[in-house]
Length: 141
Image (cartoon, rainbow, N blue to C red):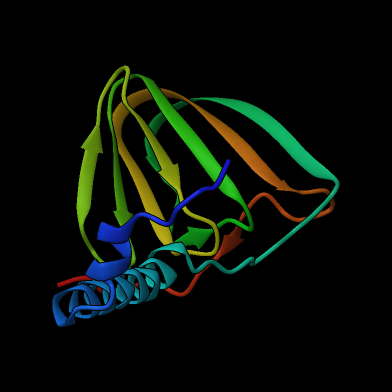
């Protein structure tokens, strides 16, 4: 049995339209690869095989964390009252009961609770790292 090459496909890539189509396809594939490089680029600030997990419960009155940062992620869930979170970009957001927010590693932040507040903070840091460190005061307008 003898197999024959599909004549239509062969002729298509011999024509100018076929070559232009193939060129456009290759250009699109190349450009999409360049775009994905920006989306998929990453960097590692810390890689540890020994992570410390600490869940801490807070009951506070007029809480003010001051400007601080963490060497790992902190997940905060508000149970009662409210907490206002301000990041280094000076955008303030208030969270109430049932709300959760994440403090980003190494980014200065301030958390304030006016009146009574009850919340849980889950710290994910490298073993031996401090839970938090004071940060320079950020001046917000």
